[in-house]
Each structure stands twice: as structure tokens, then as C-alpha cells.
Length: 181
Image (cartoon, rainbow, N blue to C red; front, side, top):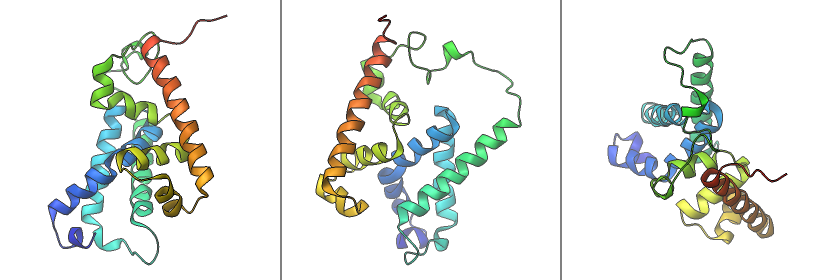
């Protein structure tokens, strides 16, 4: 973060690569739209760039500060949208974030990560955070437990439950809602 304060754009890029998915996931949870979440993510990192001197390591972790900025930016964007009438409303059947029979996905979407991001946004935040840290940042279970100050068993349980939910969401996204009665 000291490099960002000094105006190093490469350092900002490194922060984006490390935390971008986490910020995006939080934004999707708030604004419920992939395109807007991308804008919120960009706005968040722009604010980090402009307000880098405001972060005080003595007051808390960088990730907490970053996610606070992201949450506030997303809420502000959501409120702005609530006051506007959309010029070109998209029917729910055409909305790619609405899964089920109306919005089928294929393997290519999984590879490019868009579907995964939207599915992650549907998980409880504590599960999504652990999955992101474990799989995007390559942290081990014990590293997660240390970093988040959680018991190792809690980390393993939340990861397992999160992956089970993610798998079920993926199956539903691909096959559509099950029609078993």
C-alpha cells in the first residue's frame, strides 16, 4: 500500500489482481447486476488510488478498509439507481444473472469466471470469503484460520458447506431448477 501512496500504478494493479474478485463479489451482492458490479469494482479501486493516504494500518487491515469502501460505493450506486427510471429495462428472461431455464449457461461461462462470480455472490459472505481466499489467493486452511482468527475446524466446515452450495448452484445454473414433485 505504501507504493500506491507513492503513486505506483503497478502496485495498484497488484492490489486489483489480489482483491478484485472479492470486491466484485461484494458489489454483486449489493447491486445484483454484473455490469454495475464491474463499475463499482472500478470505482472502488479508483477511490483507493485517490484516498490511499487515508488508510491507517494501525486502525485495521487493508482488506477491511477496502471492503468498506466497496460496500459504501455499491450502496451509493444502488441508491442512485433506485431514484432513476431505466431507459432500456431488460426483461428478467434476458438477464444473465437470473439463473434457471431462462438463462442457461455452458462450460465456457464457467471458464471465464462470470458465472462463478455470480454464483459466489449467492453464498453467505463468510463462506464466499473463505472460498475466495483459498482458491483465488491459494491460502491453506491453517493460513485462513490464522488470518481470520477462526478455529481450524470452523474454516474447514465453512469451506465444505460453501463448496457444497456452490456445486448445487452450478448444477441448477446448468440444468435449470429441478422439477421434482
